[in-house]
Length: 271
Image (cartoon, rainbow, N blue to C red; front, side):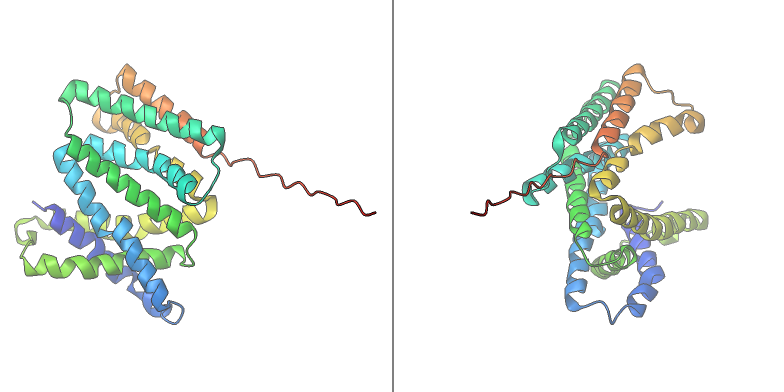
């Protein structure tokens, strides 16, 4: 019974309440610039990101949303790091990004053969969401915010931007939803997605770097396809297995560290 508006309200409303102690405890450390940075992060990986994925989901399918956005994020992150930050990726990483993209293409084409061609607008929305996520990852890597501070600010600003709109236009359907459904979504969206998922991803970026952390995200559709075997009895086709293997190989290549740049010191001859 719940709609995307209710899910977004639960996700960031509960997340903002749960993580509010972080902002209160660290208020002396959080400068106005940090709050502005948190607002930017919320625009990239907060409420607009969720609504954009939901829009793409409505025009395509759950399978496309689960495959396209997380799988495209690593190639976008690598491309943007190369274009705007001058970060050399090396042939191995570029090969990994290419393999990830190729595996995604196979998954999409396989799904199109069964369910029909997806909406180009929907695919574009999911790709745009992946690009926003990638930009956030690169910016967070250079941020002075801690993983938990970034998660708290994303939830705070997303709730502050969305909840007034949600309440003003009467978008709530909580009165029509069973209590069990509300409790499940509150736990999953408000606690796991807003609190645990954002913090742990930020922590992974801090520990592994953006390249390795984003590359691992591309495993989501592969893991989901494998888990669907015992959970739903859905056996991947030969092409889907091939796509999974290609994506996993791409992740292994893309997550490898680049070779360090050798600095050659020249000795000046002294007469």
